[in-house]
Length: 118
Image (cartoon, rainbow, N blue to C red; front, side, top):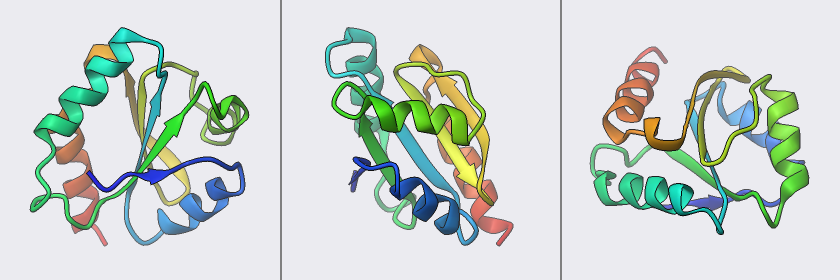
């Protein structure tokens, strides 16, 4: 996967702007949590580069950037969880899930469906 590191709150404005052109995926990861590591590994293992070549995917190490994680919850009106996936479209969270509900096929369906609406 071509992760874009999410390290600064100012990037959230860029993500909102980008999401007006295409859906954006955020993955919030706790580097000390075994569930988070499993969810990340499953997502990366199943990710099909050819299918998802146009996807914008951001990775947040929420332990290192806790303030960014808090700002995500506030900006996109979601309850904080870890691990957590959000899909942002038109500046809003249109999908979020966490823990073992993080599933590549479901994420792919949402991303591809939203890309075809542009």
